[in-house]
Image: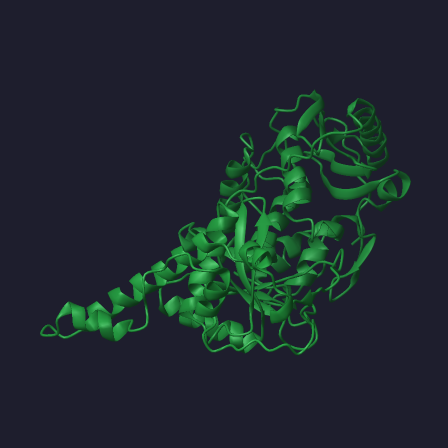
Length: 469
């Protein structure tokens, strides 16, 4: 069946322009009027999917079985069949590039089990972002009574997509993409090709909504987001968004301190109780390497000065970590002791070699941490980056902390508890917008899985991070 183009002329008009770097509103009109968002909805569908991937609830390669509901969604669609299985990555491409309704429904069902449960999660995420006048009832945006949003809320959502998941943002600017069963073409490629710096984000159209668009462009250090609801045609909408973007670049300062939005806490589907993601799941790292740091030679024993050792060893962190480890070992030994065994005997058996930690010379501290390591002067040793093809490109995350000091302290304590399992790994603190991630990197997949299971058995929450190349 061939669908003739339909022109919408009665849909209410609303618009907003925002400096993406700061969140400053540069222009607005009817920005808080609740209107039909149409396929702008899929920005939230994809955002929640990116969250689920980041938290290890699902992976890009997870096979998704297509339900009758997903297969029956009207166009725009990928043409999925009931009972068919397809990898999640192809559904994401189809939803972002082609705005496929069947793909959007399949994404929601794969993550939350049902469209209704996924809509609940979408709404919780929207509230956490500050989207006060939005209510989602489905994952695709087809007109449904009560499924509403505003130009302001959609602009806020677009800003979160850009800054919270930059590794996936390129999806929204691809002119075409392989969606597994077909190659799909971008619904807004004309505007992307015509506007200098345009790189996304999402179109939307229904008869009730008119022609909607959230667009973004970057020129030098400036980035502007503009939103239009209620365009009368594709060309009219594109002309209006071009005017708004030009207005934004004219009004935005050439220099501004980038203040990314605070990402909302990950929300699980209602069947999961809305809590944190299950530990032990795999988070697949994606994105291109932007720079490669030149490796430096590790100093030998003869060339290490006391000043270098003092700078390299944070005594407070080490003392605190060792103290925590000793206390945990003592408590474990006491709980396992028989009723007739005096506590002093248990402590002596559990930690025969532990003495109060003082501040000796830096050389003594290093020796205490590595009692079985003998440093020999064999010339400089070069530390290279982890190979992405040799198998040791997996790791484990043991939490996100408010300060780098806290993350380093946890890493050292965990390393002391699991020296055999984590042997050869690299302790790495990665700063995120929500805090500091404590990671052990440089493990094989089997090693990372074993480490995570052992840590979980000790009551430490962790999840695997990495990629199969």
